[in-house]
Length: 142
Image 1 (spheres, helix red, strand yellow):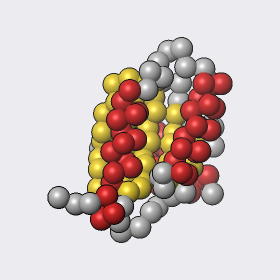
Image 2 (cartoon, one colour; image 1 turned 90 degrees about the vertical axis):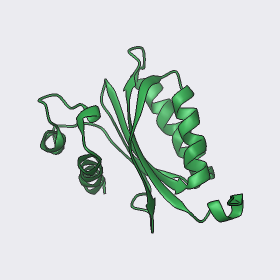
Image 3 (cartoon, helix red, strand yellow; image 1 turned 180 degrees about the vertical axis):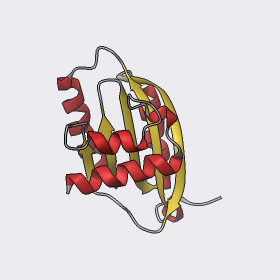
Image 4 (cartoon, helix red, strand yellow; image 1 turned 90 degrees about the horizontal axis):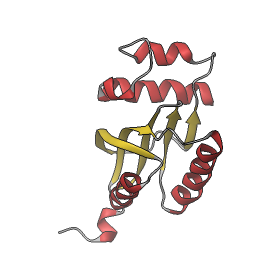
């Protein structure tokens, strides 16, 4: 059994997709972002989030125990549903601070590059495609 102290040194990444509830407004989404930035900073979590009107796709990084706690709170969050974990992995180092990318005319080609359909649907992405999409969106953000 690992102690909490040992667990804090195991860095993980988790990528998930979820469906936004139809009543989530742009204002709600801004609140989600602000809340996530504050909570994640306190808990040592970084990552990359993208959202369109229908879907969330997020990769989060941090200590294993914190990622697990966050997963439980994400599942319980009424602002989205049908959360599916796409990938988890141990990391040697972090890839992101806390970035966000929304679909824009500038980056629409990136979404289409990784999408298997004409409309972006993160549930259809492989783990590798999701990771590469997030990397390219993050590069656009910098």
